[in-house]
Amino acid sequence: MGTILTVSGVTGGIGKTTVAVNLCAALALYEKKVLIIDCDPRASATSWLGKTDAAHGRSLSSVLKKKTSFPDAIVKTRLAWLDLVPADFNLFTAARSLSGKAAGPALLKQMLHQQVGSLYDYIILDAPPGFGFLNMMALTAGHGLIVPIRLHRTSDTDCQCLLKLIHYIRKIHHTPLRIAGFVVNACENSSDIQAFPEKTRFNRLSDLVFHTRIPEDHTVIRAMDHQVPVVLEDINAPAGKAFLQFATEIDSIFSHQKEDPETRPGPDKLSMAKTSPPKMVDIRERSSEKVEQLAANIADMINEINQSEQA
Ligand SMILES: Nc1ncnc2c1ncn2[C@@H]1O[C@H](COP(=O)(O)OP(=O)(O)OP(=O)(O)O)[C@@H](O)[C@H]1O
Ligand SMILES: [Mg+2]
Image (cartoon, rainbow, N blue to C red; front, side):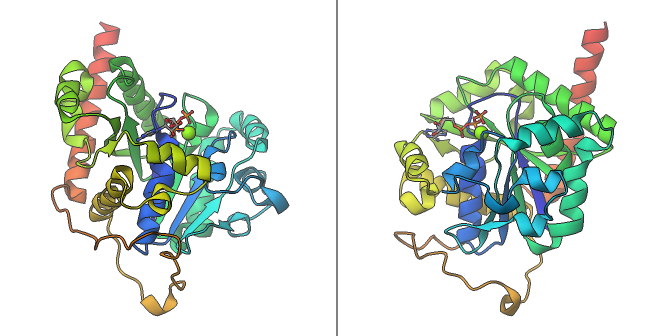
């Protein structure tokens, strides 16, 4: 079973799609088999990857409506190791019909485990913002949660809401939902970064902030316009390098048993890249045990919030 990571948060516009698409592309350059699932009816990740329509039932909405199986909904991207399940606006109606059903939020998790979990090293879900059904479904499906934060836009209230949402999902859907980490996105300078944790509840979660920071970089916007991941737009751009490092950091936490290279799909992943990515570096500072331990500590913080509200 591959690792399912949900890129989510309650805040809009903080870089969830940017992180999801570009982390996937960087992992794919490192020859990890990756599936990105667009869980947002606005289809931002789908369009970023150059897929503008979800033709022939190749969409998450068709899968959720059980008109298409997961494997049949997968489309190829420019990167041989990266596949996509596109979103379209029908996802909104699919979500509306599922949201009344008790088992609805767990449906995606169940289908992923049964149909595609063993085919990929990583399955990454790009969730919409807020508290709606689709975000809940994406959060319920994940083994781990990656939360992008922006220094001047992510508030203490955002953090508090996120922790409450995690608590709710853990309780109602009986899932461990671990926070894999917070990734600082679009940061301008390091003094900002140092000041940030002091200002909010995130200071108590600072051990969960990934080492990699994604810089503010115009290449991100250019790549989005050109409908290619940052590593294909300019692998040497600051954001390109950061996403490669982030892939390394993620893989060091969720590393997999290596499969027989003979059985893996043939690589042509570098055909669009301007230079080869550096070798994957082993970052051992955050082992999976540490992530587990940190995730457990979050439960204490959630309890504190609940108690202070009841008092
Ligand atoms: N590191 C970055 N450097 C420059 N621009 C960025 C960076 N990260 C994100 N952006 C820009 O910020 C905008 C919002 O990013 P993105 O769509 O990834 O956020 P989101 O959290 O997915 O939004 P939503 O909540 O609407 O789904 C986009 O225009 C994107 O190009
Ligand atoms: Mg988005």
